[in-house]
Length: 252
Image 1: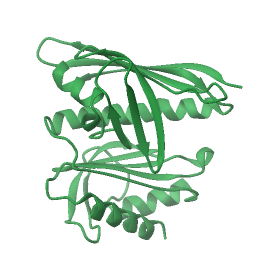
Image 2: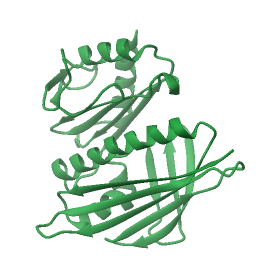
Image 3: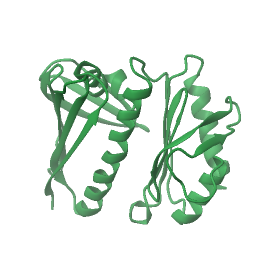
């Protein structure tokens, strides 16, 4: 039976309302910090499309007030499940902006697990949005790398293999240096910018935001990569293949 829910988040961003609008209400902007690929027609009542790993979800834009308010609602499933999103943008003195997000709708039978996953996931993605606006202003991702492996097993073992592969030892803390080699790509050096184990790990380099996500036992132990690379030299197809091969080796 569908369960009604509402989830609210707020973050202050070191960016202007115009910069925040470009990041949350345009396809190239969203593709620079969120998962998958998004296409948006820029007016109220239009359709938007979200594509990830072969799946496509379509929505209707319900609010379009540039620099102030953006909303959309997914198409309703036969069982009544849908998602609605509303972003409210408020400029502050000094050039910063407060962004408020409200996500609502109806979830399925396992709604509590899904709700907790969304709540924690938004903390990570809003942090990633802040990193994008602070470190890559005015730029959009040249490559969006997505990969997923279900049934990876014990999260402790998976994280041990993953952190070792990116040069981390001991407790994972923000600011810790990261260095890894991915066959076919230039060496990657950066720092941990989000330490949210056992679910999330974020790395920021001079040309990218890299995310490693583990769903946990209640959601099939899926390990997901979600990377955004801003270098003009990157070839998306080559990078996607290289990261998938790297992930297979790490999990072997």
